[in-house]
Amino acid sequence: MTPQTADTLADDFVLSITRRLDAPRELVFKVWSQPEHLARWWGPKDFTLPSCQMDFRPGGAFRFTMRGANGKDHTLQGVYREIVPPERLSFSWRWVDEAEDCAGPETQVTVTLESQGNKTLLTLHQARFDTVSARDSHGEGWGESLDRLTDYVGGL
Image 1 (spheres, rainbow, N blue to C red):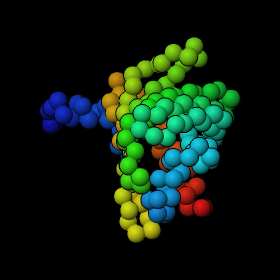
Image 2 (cartoon, rainbow, N blue to C red):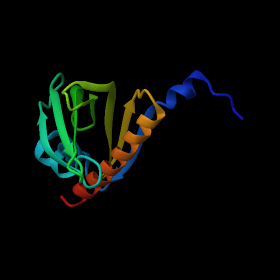
Image 3 (tube, helix red, strand yellow):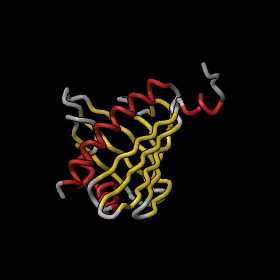
Image 4 (tube, rainbow, N blue to C red):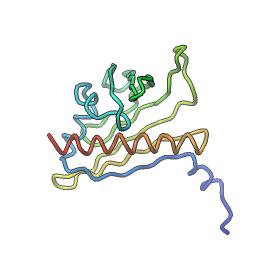
């Protein structure tokens, strides 16, 4: 058995997902940056995005409310830290509970888009989670959301 180092332990609290999308990166960037597009793909399978408030600029805030098939709302908020069209965006992420208090630690999400002809290699990185189960839960949600994104941009 290989001993775990501090680096491998830190990696346990980091989420990284890569997807190849059948769309140019300018289009992929656009659907991340405009609420009318986000509402069409954001969130896990069977979720909707009934509220999407965003000030898409460095330092601008966003607040999204996703609604599950069971009718339960899940609200998150953050601040855009870096926006480099059409190749990169980075933002903070924090859940908001029913009492309108921040719930859980703030994480940082970075999305990079690499042009591959008329296709795009998307890499999503989110860190640092406080537990492996939180990382895995976000991985499942992002996986389903990125499935929806793939379908959405493929149809544009």
